[in-house]
Length: 377
Image (cartoon, rainbow, N blue to C red; front, top):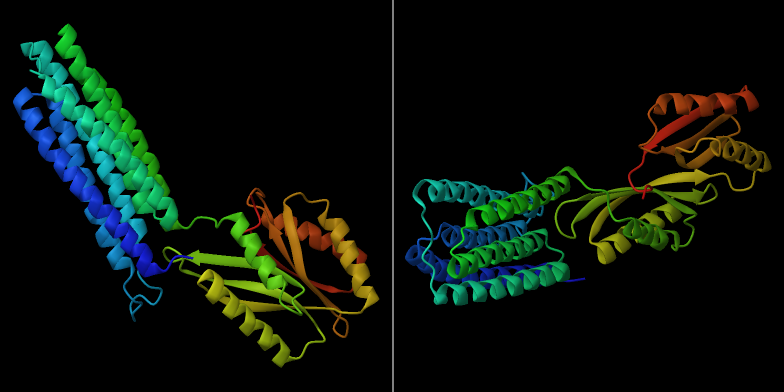
């Protein structure tokens, strides 16, 4: 697992490379666009300027996310990366909107005044080189984003690849204008602008979704539960809840099942072992709750079997666990994990309770509803 400072260094270094490359593109494209009186090349240069700004935002966000927790923000500043990723997506939307605006103005100007850009051969060379640079830059950003798991770098990489499409559209317009004296740059600009806006909307939805709170990867959830169940005397792991506070910074809770024959000191030893495992391997602060299971009572096994048969009739019950029967008080308790697909949770729980009550009419049945935080695909 990559150290946070090393991860920050990779993100900052990659972003600085992006700033340097984009500033050079802004200068060269700006000069060509002004000399050729080409709105598409000028807008292409402006788009590269927004890319440079997005890299600056990435650097600021990465540095701020490393700030130590304090009294006002005890969970740290890791979620700042989600905010900066949203800002980058907003810059992509701005670039797409400006491309649309200027392309429409270019079309209007062409039909009113017959204005055509005055391209030269050096224009083709510079735009062609810019396309290669943006493709390489985009691929490099995506590669580094995958290595360090950075939404910001991934957004910047996608933005760079979209920019290469914008430049390709500019190049096509340029070639048509030079060889056929045929005007298409405004129309090409509109198509590319719409494509960039669509991509920006998708990116901003992804960033906002991360801020709201995404479901964690099912393979990670499975791996954590398997690691915990391997600990001696842990009979099951349930109700794993994880909340992300930035890259590789999680806080959560879990319930484990243990035998009713264990003593408090033995249970505490298990809890400490789980806490150490989660901190060292997953960089996660995890609170552990306890389910005590009846260990030898045959009557309880029969009750459990009856409940299992009833549960099988309800497809939206994903799991039941924490089953315990207090014989001296005649109290049965268990938890149900119910799918988000179930429209009437209360009625489903009541139905299961009624079915069990018919089998055990004198027993007090207590059912706890657990939300599906990690079981669904």
